[in-house]
Image (cartoon, rainbow, N blue to C red; front, side):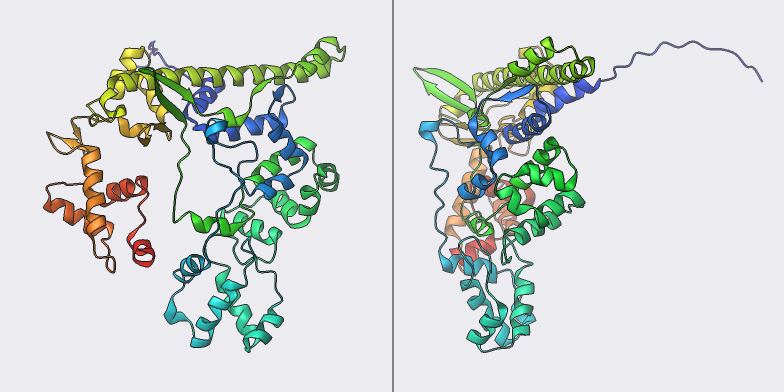
Length: 448
């Protein structure tokens, strides 16, 4: 055997932790970015938030439940003068809620008595979707056994929206965490035992009882703030779905105005008070702590600003290439990420990350940015085939003309479109139907 040494030269690019975080921030949509910034703000004293709503949320989480919003830090609707009144909760007709709940139950699983009780129990829900009544009293009113009421309630509590028919807020939030697969014992304990303190803004009581830092408790509050305190509100979601745009495009004086829809987040900046404290302190450990967090805060703010610049540049390039579409004068033309990347002298993967999961709103509607890229061989545009807009119009026409007592399923729509020479998958139809705000066949059958 011949043993010897061999020298080879190999070039590798290894991404640092900071580069990975920078790419992660670029790929975030606005809500994901807000969550990331909120987590950093909760534990980094060198980061300051100028919006009062964020601080009010940490001081008194009860404001979250008073406004019935899962966005404690602001509203993601763009300009203040154009935004709807976010605290106004449209009423859900009782019959609509009742239909949506009963639709989830299988009639043949229940006795006639149980099926008679379900509408009664639904009528007992309060405005938040809770069932705060004593089962014994309900049994007397309904002239049945308490065990029957409890058995019906047990099944009703398994239905969507998650948390409906809970006895109180604590049970509602715990059921949502359980549904999410949460196994964090501290978070579960906070919701189970310390919700009154949280609702009063007494974070110090929670931190002392559980031997946690204030920053750790604040991070748990962020997770609680993402839960739905009033499950009955979700009954509206099957009627109308709203997409929060990440980018706003306007046409003004024959010029395009492009902006990031992030004013609702408030403004993050460096905390000058702690910077001054760091400079004047003689404590080496304290200075090291501040320097570490200051570096993190500066890096994060640079990444956020770089994300803004990259997204705006890419959006402007897309608009320049798809002007007829944005002016409502034609469909989408062939455009690839490679073309946009070459025009901006960036890598195609940067374009891919920048548009990931983001929606753009313009005068004629909202569109997922990924759908603005159309190639000659794509499903939406094959060799002179129909454009994406034309396919959507065909789907809309078929549904408008369908038998309302037996509406088309997505699979049926595939067959009907094939008769018209359009070949797309069932999953694509479901995606287009959802983007147009059209319910599925079951919902169209029940609600017309």
